[in-house]
Length: 393
Image (cartoon, rainbow, N blue to C red; front, side):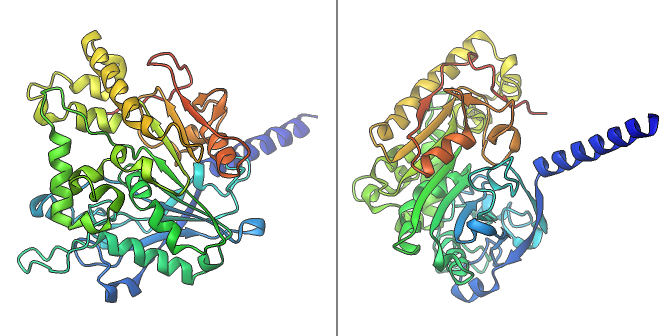
């Protein structure tokens, strides 16, 4: 009897470990797009672009998720040179494998609507949210500003590998890659087969034009420099550049309403990256008053929380431009977080964040398959007990 119980216990442990491993995700090797080099579609240092490709299976073999990685931006030669010895500027420095979980999981239990799709993560090494295109290469720096070319070259490579037969396709991205999925959404649609069902998903990519706590417009100036340095204007939506300066067309609030392809926005109203780098960047907080607050929202003073509530108000105003469009979805939770689709704990788990009793996974799946629309905005912090608020070291 004791041996039977031990057997059962051993089986239970094995099953638990297998479930945990599945939740953590599968490890996917890197693919270098060597053919892109001849097209000038290269990383900042001139190395080839790269992606990780987990192939679809069964009924998902003709369905594709193409996800663009994030990692901020560089706004001049100095900050771009800082990136070339890292994965954000050179494919030579990239990890050779990546873990796929959440939206990219191949487990039906963890990703029921998309588990058997072709799932691709495109690595970020250009510093312009895949918009740049400067022909000249400065011999002093050897910097290549070619993000826009990388975008097209990667899509062309995937089309040749079967995406030309796509029945369903999603362009997605997180952070700076989430901005890519907004700025390049309609272009992605034109590159895919006309008969394919194509939509876009932006995770933590809705960066807003708001003043810092010092009163200065740091992010507006920074984005203008990014666009200028990378020659991005030609790859930004003409519906925006025809009426505003190119730098302002890097802000989703000036672009989103004109996007024709259906798009879904997943974002925290208190986006931790934006709080740290747009609202209270170091340059606007020389005495470090915001340091502890930025590391952990529970450490914020009453005045700081009030300022963050003001940021939320500005964020909701900025995203309201898409609220009247039935083809656009949104999951705007009241959490202190950044990028929620690629982690199992925030995508779909028993303790994942919910709005209207719905996880991000279900909201995106229902919207994509037209089972229902979804446009939900959470109540102000700290009202949602399901939040996974980020705590930084």
